[in-house]
Image (cartoon, rainbow over the protein chains, first blue to last red):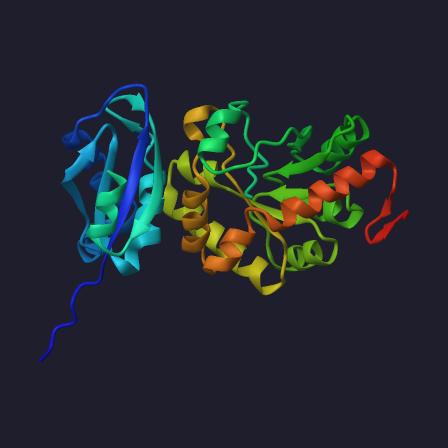
Length: 105
Length: 189
């Protein structure tokens, strides 16, 4: 039986904050917010990954299933603080391939 | 061009960065506990471009909608009233800040989804706002569109909720200021 491939989308995001935040803390905050909003089951279905290669100067890329783009965006919007610093997570654009996203870095 | 009608920040640069057109409106938010309280507040209400009824109970909503005394209602509205709101062109405000600072988010999300579903059914104008009390509670236009889509609006309707009714209200305010506005649907040419 053929297994349907996971159609990926890449969300380019920027964190508006006074301080530079580490990838680890950003990763934790994104997963915790996603789990709080979607639950463990839905988060697992979303195939959420924060791509470590692209994280630089509070900007990064999240890989997600194409059905969960809007829900992931809402989960990002619901993050209020990271390491007790007030932040705003702004999603810039959604891409279908990594090749295009490289031109933004 | 997107608008965020309800926020308490004056950071125009940040609003522009988040994809909004900064506008200066005098907004009067009415928070009334009961009908006599609402009537008393409205009798003393200052002249404002936009009058918003904040989290009213059913009786207060009914009086406000019957009198057409408000431009928009920020809260959860049920069936007969939401249909009347559509007739009288009173907008429903969906406030992102209520979800952001909610103690129990699933309940707020459920009530919002229910209200938006009814608004969609009866074609009540919807306005999505960030409702930010400080600059860190502001959210970008794309996040608010995602929020609207999660509440049950289509991609097109979600975008429209950020500018269509707002532009109509701005036009109405412009007409009132120029003295050409008579009543809904009637203007001096």
